[in-house]
Image (cartoon, rainbow, N blue to C red; front, side, top):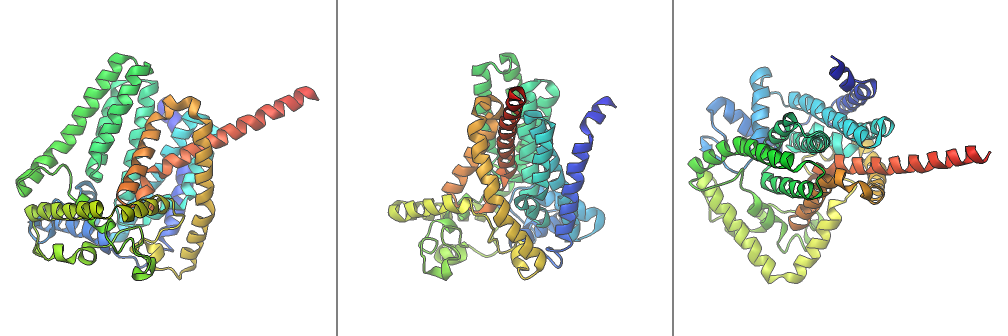
Length: 436
């Protein structure tokens, strides 16, 4: 009971309720009339096929390896209980996103104190590049929560290396890897974190080794069954899902480097293979089952790599665009409710708020990174995740949605800047009191 009271404090409850209120307001204004399209429609279609055909299929009775399994499975579980109502998913995501804000509060509180933690949690609650993903049937919101929870569990493990935190970390990493197909990269970051913890002796070396074994085994326990399933349907090893080739061929082509193409809409971003490489698309049937999906993605990847080798100057230009695009302060995602209903006053207000607060968070995060470097051991895994996300955006393409996993981490660094500023002002106040 005492442990529960230490968690459910007034600041924590306040952050969660404010975050939930903001998300309810967003979903009752901006997203009214929203229905799934593009990737969100794919997720919903797979979820419905799980329920009706007992098949992880995008096309009827054709197993797919083109998507990670967790998010469609979650949608299917919710639909199984309340029926096929996409608005119920937005309600679920409102709670997930509020949970993310709560984690930001706990994380910042443990790093910088209750006052800064409360400010950080409230910033997360009203930060548009967190709550917009709670009004969209994409996988971002749940992945943000799982990745932040994994970061926080490692932080707590670093302070108190208990077996319960090792188990929790392994479960969170396994779930995050099934939510988006970049679990191997996160596992590699975890190994890098372990190496530094071992070298610096921040954690007793025996505990470091125990953590490595427990987390890795749990990660494999979650991922291996899906790896086996993918092998059975695709007749080759697909770790979680295909898709790298599709992303690369859509990002590296003459259209995305052409300032005259489609009024710069696709400049430095991504164009569907049907438009970027129609000849390659025609080599594969429309009814493309799992083995076909693997072959097609390999063809996309080969085509993209060939283009990259043949166009070094254009690639250099694209990489610069990727870096700039990652830090955009508004989102041009076609399926985002903000852009589906741009004329609504609520949408206009959210976009204006994006333009105001996002540069402030970026500036504070940059300052926070500098002024908290002396505490790098506590923040090391956060640094790794941010660097890995930036690298992905540069290599593939940079848009705010691809930046989404590190939004809470940027708020944590911004909280570090506020902590430093409060410390400076507090010292000045004490000196003035002494002088008086």
